[in-house]
Length: 189
Image (cartoon, rainbow, N blue to C red; front, side, top):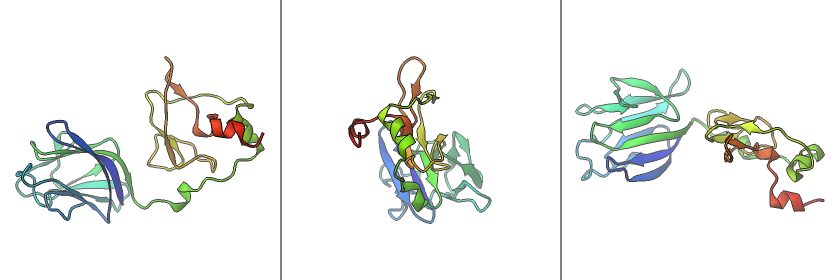
């Protein structure tokens, strides 16, 4: 499995996370996928918690510490609880927080393949065909990878996932396949 996110210290300092393993272990042990310094976090256990695929589907947070709590979105976890993108996992009341941006069981190798656009789609890319705007609110991720994107566009011309950009008062953006680019507008006529 793979976890992307951010490790946030109680001081507000943060560092990006992009880790993988059969499960993602959190704690002071240097062998954990997310290892925190023992000197900085003496109340965090060696194996404080674990995020793993749930046999019923999705992912779950498993509390492992015998001396300190694991909190999911501010609520202590007694045994295990479902976890998803957007959740915050805190290691004890005074420890660091793992902000979960994405969880992925087995990456789909086909998700990164993009096929050649046909004439109709090339016209969209060049800006000579009309396309409707897609309202995305405050932004998000557009793509075709279920579970990793907020706006699913399941089409082979769409990349796996692309950050959505927003502009103007209506906070609108063009779908990735309809946004003209300098490269596509000068290539192939």
